[in-house]
Image (tube, rainbow, N blue to C red):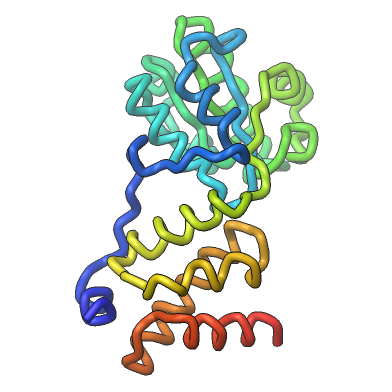
Length: 224
């Protein structure tokens, strides 16, 4: 039955604060997001690997701060003065490395938004010194920004992420599935996403429920 629902319904990400599980691996980042009005110089870099919750926390912050959200790769074509009329989150800033026009756009957005009294959140997969930026003025602005990182998930966070990924796909794995996966799967958010997507596909293909047996098959294939 769960697989029939998965086939009929789209994947819907839950991005509210109530959907974000707090553990020691992300507590510092959540605290910074919730305490955004106290950010030094009204700006913050939130760093973490793909799937670690950066986008989720950016949406949580956008709701708290009534902020806009824009992908860094869209800045080159954006109306920067229009963006600098509210609090603003820029996602995946590492993706504009070596793109001079986009780097200049982020530099101008940074300066204008802060000059107008707004607050700036920037997300990336790693700290600014590892982005590969080439615009010296932007490098200095980013390296002078407070950094908070999302750490490798602990067991409780990995379990919560798996539950959320299943819920986003309207799936109900059997109770033993997640406890079986946690100690055996790679400890990363990318791996969690891959495992859940593969289980979804395999359950649909075979008509079987998502359980320990199916999970074993998926993990065996990851090792090959």
